[in-house]
Figure 1 (cartoon, helix red, strand yellow):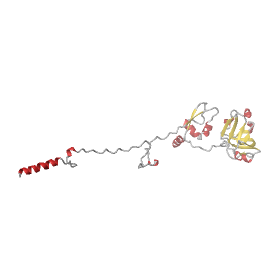
Figure 2: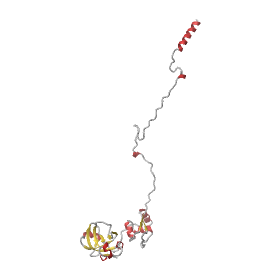
Figure 3: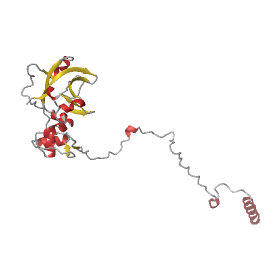
Length: 247
């Protein structure tokens, strides 16, 4: 009986040795492989993925850059032959008082060729005005005591009504220029409808030296024919007896 039991046990063990191993039966001999991690996709420069969100340019707010307040630099004018203080101020749209104050000058100052003058800018004029200086532009006062022309004369403003007539005209010369040797005197800013006194270069010998400055800022009477030319309304002045300064 004992021998029979031992034989049965030995046959059972032999049979088990021939059976294949169950999956996971021997954990010591099982190799575990970790799957590779998915690589992060990359895109060529300038190419965006389908899920990218575009940010409008107006929503991108750059960091502001602080800059200093710009400083207005005044103009430096170099005095030329024939210049006078009133004309320099007029040509640069500043009052004579502002020009004098900016340069520490008086009206009696005699200019020299090559002298450098500061033309004040708006901030300089405002600063001088705060100090109580008389620097604001003002309407020039004519040398003649009354703006009403003398009997027999007309105002330069009426000249366009007398084209083709020989008349006497009165007014304050506020601008002048010399071009091609000819001298032009103006009662206001040059305009086709504003009278211009024209002294031809061939007639300059009959006038005082440098008539472009001699008559500037002076109240004058001019006698001659009023003509309409391509340049506008003009009166040609042939000799100094036709152009007089009224003091």
